[in-house]
Length: 233
Ligand code: ATP
Ligand code: MG
Figure 1 (cartoon, helix red, strand yellow):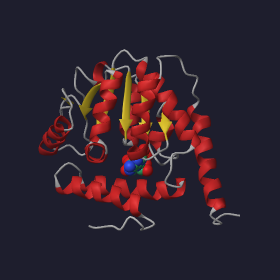
Figure 2 (cartoon, helix red, strand yellow):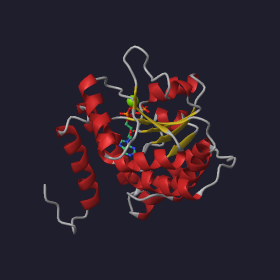
Figure 3 (tube, helix red, strand yellow):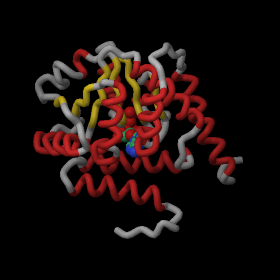
Figure 4 (spheres, protein in one colour):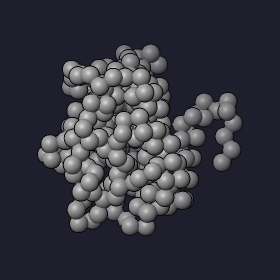
């Protein structure tokens, strides 16, 4: 589709085109298209820009990833379709492993995602297996796991395994957002780039990030955005 740059929804529609291409290329699941739609709706409410709260979460996430012993980046079809290059750059900047983890398990799709990440420059890509759920050298032994776009049940399972979880989720009310240790309420297409540059600049120091407080300020930012647009008294 040819979208004129002047279109008010240009950026959002271009991201949508990436997801559709990912679906046509066999990377994205049908359910992934719907999950993206939910993300689009929340991005609209957030104002389609990286907020102050998101920037603070990105900073905290960078120091957490840099101080990890065994950081792992968990990738699904949507992430592979939206920001494969940034995933590779982030893995390099933080010495993290990349692991493909699919909620809707499909061997062929997994292979395609693995291939696309390698094409984007990944040297090594770990894969989960239907029996083990996670790769024994990847998430299983990881201390910090970055889940850009994850389902709530899986985030909860990671927490039960004792992992520190960093998530991207545009919905501050989702279970993933609520369960993660650091939630970046931003579109992965914007935030991942910022996370890569934060990791290149930051040092592995301690953070005293409070996710509850951050999520509540993300909700306030949505309210303020609606107020500014005259949709809320
Ligand atoms: P949960 O399972 O955590 O309670 P959910 O069931 O509402 O959440 P899922 O369909 O499991 O949601 O996952 C999609 C989530 O990812 C949604 O919260 C959506 O806002 C978010 N999301 C989708 N696309 C993006 C994106 N590009 N960037 C950031 N977040 C996104
Ligand atoms: Mg869910």
